[in-house]
Length: 235
Image 1 (cartoon, rainbow, N blue to C red):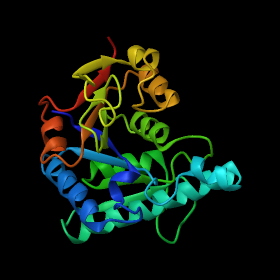
Image 2 (image 1 turned 135 degrees about the vertical axis):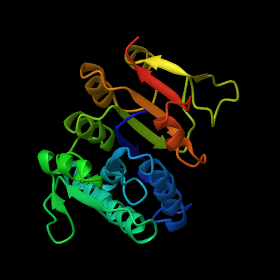
Image 3 (image 1 turned 30 degrees about the vertical axis):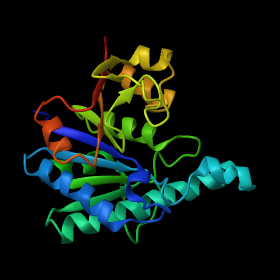
Image 4 (image 1 turned 90 degrees about the vertical axis):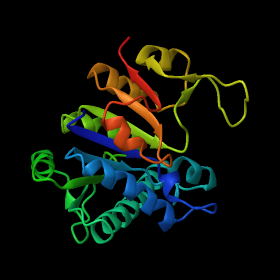
C-alpha cells in the first residue's frame, strides 16, 4: 500500500458540459479522495484549471501568453478552494490549500517543510497555482510537488481509464496499456502528460498511474495496490 501519494486531478473533471464548476462532479472526486484518506494514506492534490480557463487557448484571442498562464493559475486556486470546502464540510477531512502565488487571504504560500508537516498530521494538502511560473503545465507542477513531498506515486485522475496507443474517443481499435515505461511514452508521443512532466518523473524514478476518477473506488483500489488504469514507470 502506498503511504504518501500525489493525486493530479484534471480541471476538466471539475467542469460541467459548459465548463465552470460542476459541484456534483467535485463531490464525486471528494468522495473518492475521502475513501483513500480512510486508509491513513497521506494525500497531496494538484488540481488543474481547464474547466475555467486554458491559458494556451486564451493566447489565440490576443491575451499575452504569460498573462493567460497566470489567469490559469488563479483558476486552479478557485478549484482548490471548492475542493477544500467540500472535503471539510461534507466529509470532515482537515485540508489545507498551499499556493505557488501569494493569495494570503485564502491560502497559505507553498512551503515544502510545512506541507510535509501537514501531511504528517493527517491533513490533505491541495497545491494550487501550478509552479507559480508561466509556460509550465499543472502536470509538471504535480510531478514537481510529488517529488518535493517524497510521494510514493503520482496518480493522474482523468476522465479516461488509462493510457492508450491512440485516442479511444476517436478510434474504436485503440489499445490500452496496463503498464508502459517513460521512454515509450515519449517515443510514441502519447498524450498522457507533457514531455517536461514525464522527463521529471523519469529522472526522479517517480511512478505515475493514470486512472478514471469517476469509476467507483479507483483511487482507493490503486492505493491498495490493485490493478487500476495504466502504470508508467521505468522499464
